[in-house]
Length: 325
Length: 307
Image (cartoon, rainbow over all chains, first blue to last red):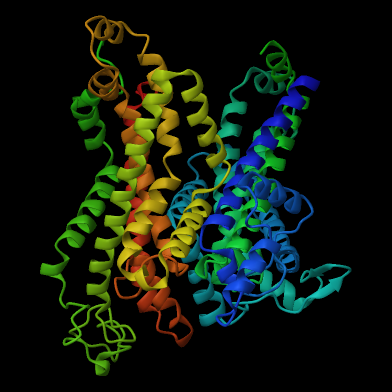
């Protein structure tokens, strides 16, 4: 078990180092960092001085080491565009993205699981057919198009929900939250639904196919033979056994939630990290791009590691394989 | 049957034709795809207007609703945008660009993935580890993020001035490079199985070069799954292109794809001028849905387990 843990952790560290190398290469070799930092009137001598001061004349390996060291201390330099430390920019926008991802995941789970159970238990009913057809269309609809349609229906035509921004936010320590004000809650509805819709269809289809699989197994037949109620069988036995893969997939999907958040945040002008990253890409603001890349990599790698560990704890077979390998 | 399952021959065998003719949904999907592809290909001949010919544009015609609306104009079936461009014609030309980027980027990703997968599977050892670890790292990130990153880097390298002319190829490259992993993994897996078969051994014995063994003998036997992935990824590539263009880092308004058109129309949605965004959006959604249905069918039809 310990060997398995250590090996997975080392692999995760390696992935992070590779991503750091890519981020460093971007930062150092795409465009000249000096040109981006100084004005037009800076003399060549001043430029050379700045170059020396920033250590850009050192061997590349030393520079990379310094880059990693700084990154470990959350120092990603200064944004070319905003002239502010990248960490401050990201820290300011992190709560907005996390709240959006959290609410959308909640929406997807709370609706997706019952819908999946219903379509598995009532195969061929008109509601199941409708749900499955709509979900197929939902998967084919690009995220930004869903967002536009929702804005058009609920913000423009019906005028019931706001179409952009976060509404009023409350500051709790370093965290700004929109979940405590009425306007904040109204503002999060459309973005969260847009972001959660793909997850919702995914969870529904997954729960459905897992349920169908489990319902065919022997222990469900025995439970029926014992005379348990349908309710106890369906929810106590069948659903419980479908949830492990569902939770795994949802956890692993968190990555794509962060990626789709870039699109959702742009459509709804939601002031989160995704919008910041997109503006950075549009303006070739390399320090912000590099920091975002590293941050997302760290989040992904941590999630993957946790999922792997949970798996090893839940499923003894993986531990055995890990030992023999 | 002794025919190798999933080989190229399976493409034209009767099972496939049979299953195609027995699925109405698939036939409709194929018809829709074909119709959009043909309409896009022949856009210059069938489009009622040339949306890029400035002499034909008149600001007097701008912001017109679809022809069936009370103040619609019969000349513009689906209405016009803010510059007086015919929305229907713009969609036809836009679909041309969307399909072009989608097709070329899928070809690039497939070519890259196939070559890397074949080499990794056949060579094994350090080469295999290197390629597959690279694939693992890339798989950690969603394609959209990688495409955005490549796009941003190329922008920084090429400078603003050249964006208009290079935008098309930058997109093809970003999308292609962001989606080769799936091909490489599948091809590597099949190659690992194929390389121990007798025909590869025989080919080696008679002294064929590894290149000719890989591309003339192994490749045809691993193409089945590749076609399925390519079909499904074609839909994904079109969505990715539309998304990037919508986000403003794809094709510029001077050569609009479907995504650019939706992005332009999005600005006028609040004024109630829904047709500028909704019609290109519906075209995009219909096209991708049809391609996805075709991909699903192809996957089931080529999978011997489901037959």
